[in-house]
Image 1 (cartoon, protein in one colour):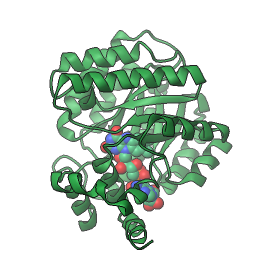
Image 2 (image 1 turned 30 degrees about the vertical axis):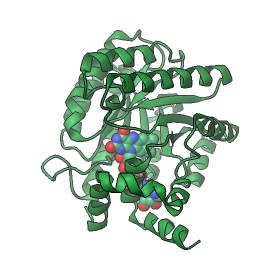
Image 3 (image 1 turned 90 degrees about the vertical axis):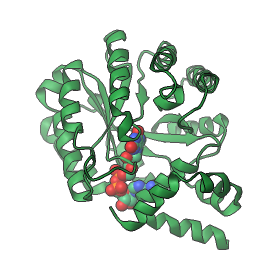
Image 4 (image 1 turned 180 degrees about the vertical axis):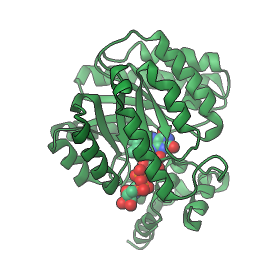
Length: 313
Ligand code: FDA
């Protein structure tokens, strides 16, 4: 991992910077590149525009690690309103939640109840995605995910999906355990600051693991059990290999999708949709954007150039 990436990920955890950075206009101007706005209406407006271009979307309301059950309740209520708004407008939009936002740090039962309330409102042809946070949360997240999956009725598209991170050594084994359950799996490289004992430090190894895991998601046994894969990366070289693999194995477009973040690789997002694949854009919104934004800078330290440019504009 590069020094710049390490520093930016450390800064993402700084309370000092979290308090101060959002006060600066040039920082907020840079953030606007990665999110359409802080309000749900901003996200809905962006989703409508994407839908007009043939792109689906996934909403995530920014925030992590809550301190009280009433905060978790507020987040749950917010997502219930989001699901209602999506249904009213019939948007091709899903939601992606962090379990710490639903109360995982406070009480796993409370978190599960909040998750189940959201799942009860998910449209028949849609998936509710669960983000994967730092490695210390993986066990608890998988436990609640498996419980939710077992409780949900079988249908064409799994009602609940989980994010798995290719940088973790453990992910190959986690995926093997999940495959017989026929889940929806969003594969990402991984965005947190992890020790080398837990996560692969070299990008090359992470990329290869990502490709290998995609192969497992498209193995005959995985496809038979009804796995739905979301390939969430902006890495065009990797995407080209994965598209070739999909064609070689005859994976139908209904069995998977590509997902990317709002504002990144827009041309590639449209190209994928134009090639006949489902392509979804994850739209983050909300006022608690600082750590999320720092992880976006860490993914591509060249993004610091936008920060500097906005400082002088
Ligand atoms: P990589 O970092 O190798 O980037 C490849 C290329 O993409 C770069 O060279 C650059 O051109 C472009 N690019 C990538 N990131 C960029 C950025 N921020 N700004 C500008 N250009 C950029 N992680 C996690 O740990 N838990 C989670 O739940 C999720 N959820 C999630 C959902 C979705 C839909 C996406 C797309 C990603 C996530 N992630 C995530 C983040 C993920 O782990 C990873 O950090 C980013 O996707 C960046 O990695 P890439 O796969 O894009 O490759």
